Image 1 (cartoon, rainbow, N blue to C red):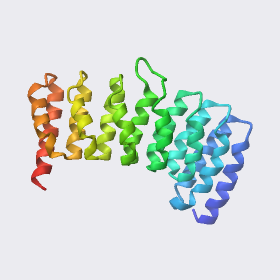
Image 2 (image 1 turned 180 degrees about the vertical axis):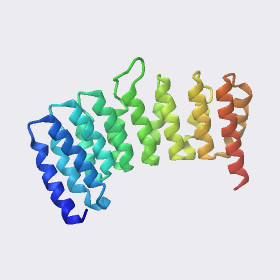
Image 3 (image 1 turned 45 degrees about the horizontal axis):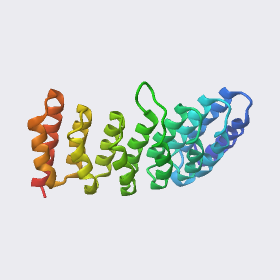
Image 4 (image 1 turned 60 degrees about the horizontal axis):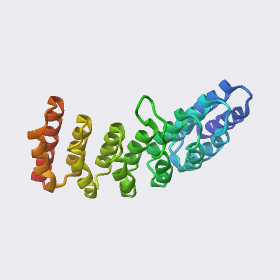
Length: 241
């Protein structure tokens, strides 16, 4: 499909965003997302801006598909839409906003994620929006997220701590090492394992004794193997330096 034809399709699909039928609006969102991905990134902004009109759509399923579409389109113009949708009353929308912030990989999304990191909505006992916000901060790859993630690493919920550890490993900043070392003694095995992996990814030589201790003391068989693998990875990285 040529650029002229794509432009015509974009105009036609954008007009459907005003349809009185929710299924029509949803279908338009999906088609516009596909069309956007056929364009160079710098040309996708107008599609992201066109979708902004649906941030207050009456149907939650339209809004959560919109939130995902913004991430898939990948243009910074979608940040305005995500900022508004971070306050959506539906948790399915808010956790998708977090995921899309991560997909944009733009550190200007950090204030949105910091807001979502205060979200109290839970499935069962776990604050899922907060956990997804932590994970998305790692996707940004920005050291600016360290302060928020260090706070989340001390959260009362293990799923949040686990995702914060993963995110700190993704960012790879050595300043996160002390917080991750503390997580090596977390009461939840998954948190200990992911903290070890994150420390290996950061590659801080000073934590080798802590990982060695953790391997010796670990009582959870699977996590013992995970931590041992992290220790070996860190040793390998140090030998190559």
